[in-house]
Length: 219
Image (cartoon, rainbow, N blue to C red):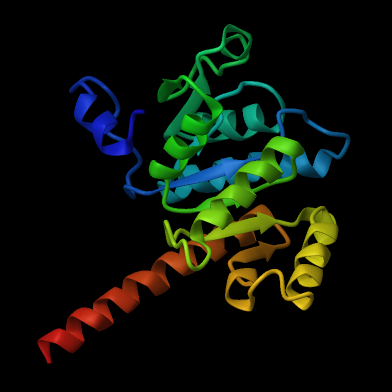
């Protein structure tokens, strides 16, 4: 299975170097547009903001639905987009044609793993089974005692789209089946802009914590 370091080593000099910030966010969202224009607008807004901030997008590679809206918004505004798609012909037909980088994998499990490897944070916009499965797995990987990564994960809870999910998470925590330290890993924000700010704040806090540790050793 390909990993992020191997892919970077394989890139040729003529390929795009990546986003200016050197950071990527993996965004999970619907392959359908849905019935609410607000979701379309928020996907477009997130794409424009990520491009403006120099943050690369990692996503499922499709040109359709909210996924296509997001990727096109990043690209139209000069941003960097990595799509990760399975080699199945049926999905290849849905792939976005104008991406900065399109990576192919053999299985859906490899796809999710590689998307995580390439990113430093995750955002979930409105979506269905795939969106939920992917963001929940990312949260599972970060929870104790696994702690396979420390990347911040945030739901863009637009117009309360994920209210029922968060009510369930609170119920699971109240029943003692979701540890409090893991419950807080599922962050939420009311808009795409606020979700992006949550991720950036988490990055800043992690960087400051690292600097504090370095200073403590130097003291």
